[in-house]
Length: 453
Image (tube, rainbow, N blue to C red; front, side, top):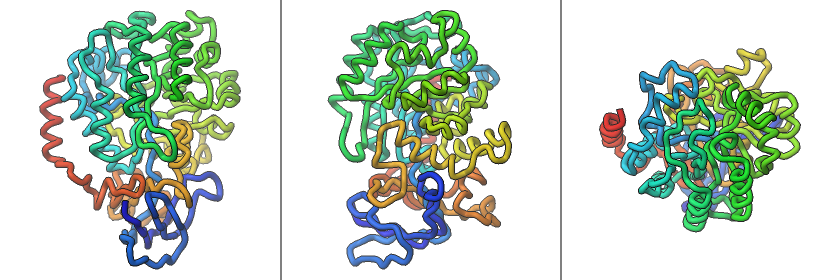
């Protein structure tokens, strides 16, 4: 791991809140994968590599807290393009889940992670739920292997279900696993991959597909206790559509957040994807327990699910992060586009002061690190891991921008990524992922997509 000096940037965004959000035009010195110094006018040392960042802005690497990488081969499937969530699930992913093999998953993960890398994403949490009785594959291992190949931080949220038809509208046609199957595989994955200590590169999370109807309450509690005994976090979908809320009230006699509270699924070690339909009386429970959310505005808009109360939650103190969700319900699954829409959609709903670009950047960086429990990443500050993106504002959409610091978020588009570092190691250099043949990947993806059509 070489020492680096990044110098000459037009602006540096830190991912920190309030007045600390902007560091100005400082240089960054990196030693042993950690930010060692941040100040203007640093002089290169004899033994350090210099990265010139003139014309660029520097951000913390984005932390994507909820994805379904297998869906990278299921974009814009015609049968599901205009369907809401359950119709889309029945038309797009579920009819194909038992047909997906390791080579499909490997290709999909390469496509999805490459897209994330080229948007400046240094950490990805993937909620993988292709697990069922009789599955002759260890798909979590495939995902870890691809992440290793590409060099980004990776968190596997091991999904699954022990209830096949609990919700009458949910199109789950997979044969359910037993609770022992799930716990034993999480334990196996934890022993093989899970890292602790400063700035881990690999972690495992307990993540049943949906707490309110993929498992029963007794199993939900058993999974929570097993996860905590192993020292791993908990994740799932919750309150994505109004149907989630209606079902939970009718079947369990309470709201989804209240149900999770009753079954040991709230806490600082828990975060939920979506949380679009949250009632006023659920907010205090989330705040008091430190339970976080993965805000997925593009997928929520694409499926017509609604708009989460993310700005309100964030200002209350509830941990908020950003996530792209699966590419089958978000055909542009990159974090720049996600941040751009997050900045836009809340202003359309709540007015021009509903959310600032700085707040959105914090959600997507420091906020993501917080919900994943990765305290050493997510910000650009002395002592933090050198996970950072250097964006070149060389495209016409950025010409004429007065405040270049917020250009990637406010102008959107696909910013030219000059460098992406993870632990100070370049995983994107001059817009290219080292060692990745993009044309070969395109052809491989085309073949795999045809097989799953």
